[in-house]
Image (cartoon, rainbow, N blue to C red; front, side):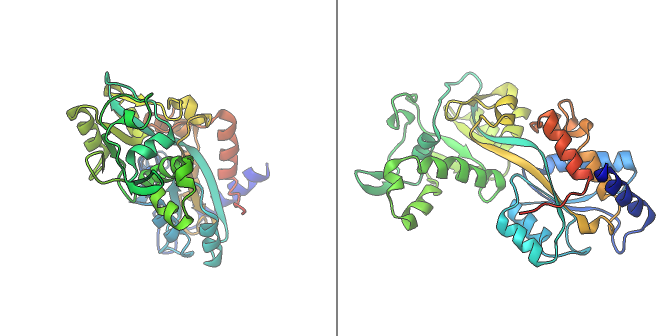
Length: 338
């Protein structure tokens, strides 16, 4: 009841006041969150007869840096990122006067390994993916250029086929998630790599080879899908939400023995998950009209529910109880604490 009263009071202030200098919500969104946030923005504008939010597509770090830079119309009202805000970022917000922030978990995505439908399926571990794609490996006690050219050279359980992987765009959220959640994690599971001095090991764990075995997407994941079908034995790394768009022509490959699907991602069983968040600057509720309504739209069942339009775009929905908790948190304007 306290949450509802607080939300109702905020709504009254919003409807009764004009924005001072800006009447359109400004949002910064990472690449992973952008399609979902943009769709909510369009639905919000239609359902609430408000201006469509201005949404800038950027990285998670750029989003949080701008969000935490201060309070006022020159700073974004909302950001969407595929991870929790780091403690250092939260501290940065506090130091710059952004003292009231609502953290809202909105759903899940995953980073998946795919190939052409009907092709051979590999079942690598994170450590084996690292051994396939790392720039350098420890061989006979020495850190050398990666000698592996075929999957079965890494382990005889893997198929006798050339290593050919096209990966996420560098310096993007999917790219960073792949480096940290697959490459770095896999690296540290290899005893010879783990024994290296920290100053040598850390960069080696996140350095990708740049030969014919691995290349980064240069423009979009559509390019990755095209190459998967054009080249024999070509694999690709991409967000699960993008795989869903092309699921009829692509095959998923398990990682660490778990095949990605809505259930394994939502339950946390799949090992490469991105949790999607939006962060709202509570101090802007009174300044920019429509923020509460936007949050209400985002947390509605028609948006993030099992049959919602965000799920149609590839978002993995949270459980019913999680959605109830997060909606109450959102419309209650609850401040996050660290």
